[in-house]
Amino acid sequence: MDFMALFLAGGAAQGYMTFLPFILIIVVFYFMLIRPNQQRQKKWQEMLGGLKSGDKVTTTGGLRGTIISIKEDAIQLRIPPDNVKVEVVKTAIASVTTQEEVK
Image 1 (cartoon, one colour):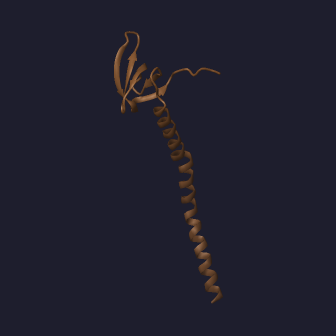
Image 2 (cartoon, rainbow, N blue to C red):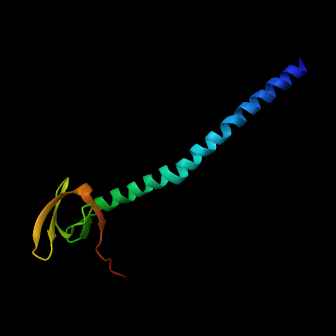
Image 3 (tube, rainbow, N blue to C red):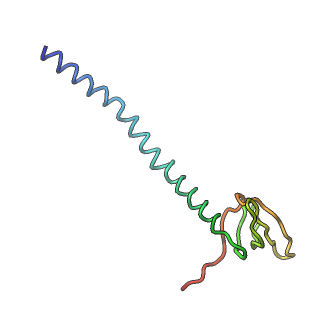
């Protein structure tokens, strides 16, 4: 009976060892791919929430302009040099290019 108990305990440990590489791969994928993407998404959402009139922005389409007004889901931009007014969806804003004042 002691031999059978040792055999079963060893088999269970070996079973865990076969799944260990898969678990490690999942952990590596989480920290290398999923988590950084979640952090980038959170920063982008914060940037969209902090937009205000007068900010200079760049859209995902490459348009650069100054925010004139902000609606719930859209932003009105003034595009130089002819001061053309364009309305874009908020989610089309890729980055804010307004230079922050150094204090």
